[in-house]
Amino acid sequence: MLSIKSFIVDKFLSVWWAVVILLLALPFAVWAVSFFNPSPEATACRLFSGHEVCAMSIRRSAARYWEYRTVVSIDGVKQPLELYNCRDRTRTLASDSTRVPFLTGKTGDWICQLTTPKRSSQLTERVNIGIR
Image 1 (spheres, helix red, strand yellow):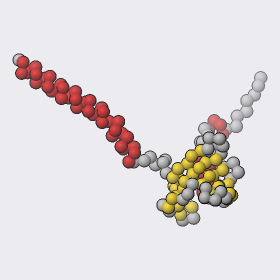
Image 2 (tube, rainbow, N blue to C red):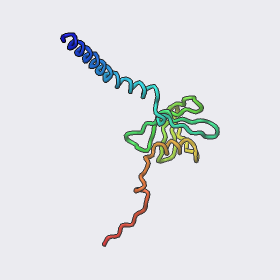
Image 3 (cartoon, rainbow, N blue to C red):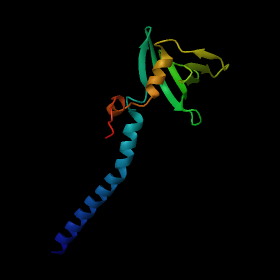
Image 4 (cartoon, one colour):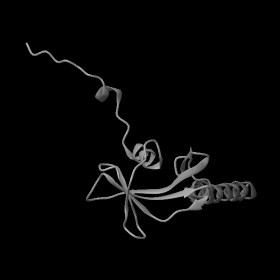
């Protein structure tokens, strides 16, 4: 009887430790999968004039919400940091601080479209409210 009891206790403890190890390893496994397989939204790419342009990182300015610091890669070659001003439709090169106006339908417009929040359908509809 004692051997059966010890056998059950040993099996319970081994299963208990297996569950504990699994629960401790699960967060690491989730992190590893998300780290080594980035989400498709992480790099947005688009074709412009036969060149693949990808937005590697986009950071919004805290003081000026219409300005974005962006690193772009063209055909896999990483470009230096540029400051996109979506209000004035210009981009400023970080290397020499020259301001270049956006060309219509090119990278500047695309970066600004990526960063503008999607409006809900309720905001875009025009509603007439009658006061009685």
